[in-house]
Length: 294
Image 1 (cartoon, rainbow, N blue to C red):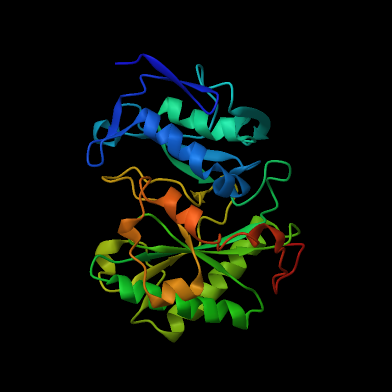
Image 2: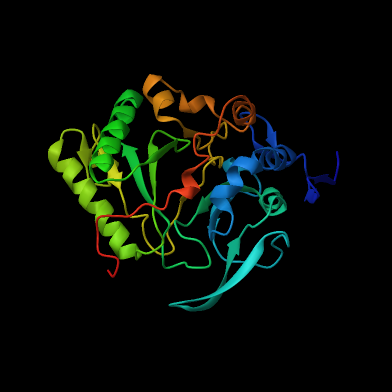
């Protein structure tokens, strides 16, 4: 058994350590996955503060969140000094493919990104809507909910892009101009969510507790805040089978997708075979119908 391997120029120790027993995924497989999808994933990760889910011995042995630099973290991952309410600290940022691959070295199974970039962390460039279904909501109803939210956003004058979460829900992202505060962006998103729940209370809710909404979908907009994050496009999830959060085309979503079929074993082939549905999301700085000064 090898003690180390070099993948995309990054040294990976204990490359045969199993991180997911369901697929038999090893550290080397995770590193090779990040290397394979970097072309598509980096536009959504580069220059954004990260919140990472680390599972050094595999997800069955326990995981933990990390958003600040620590001793022994790979040099390929950049540290950016910032001053937060609790004092000065260093946030983790990936700027190059090698940095993404290096996350596998410390057992990162989930990559979450802020909705703002590190150069202007108080000005988001994306607004996120998380459609989180209750335990009795079928996938078809989640898809219908996403399509309804898309129409509501169109009525607000903005376009949205959609991706699976790697779980049972869907994420909608609205790219925006970097002129609004988090309070303004979140306030607008909440207004949209409230209107949606008021129009169809049998389908949507602002109640986060799953046991209180078994047949309804929670429209979560709380991630639109400084320091909060959403799972990045093409990030695996720390669960059996290592499913992946995958951007999809609206037409593809409407005609039928199986989110459980997208894992780190299948996503690279998907990316090679079809156009990237989020190729132009970074070029759309849309204006929101709110005051910029809030």
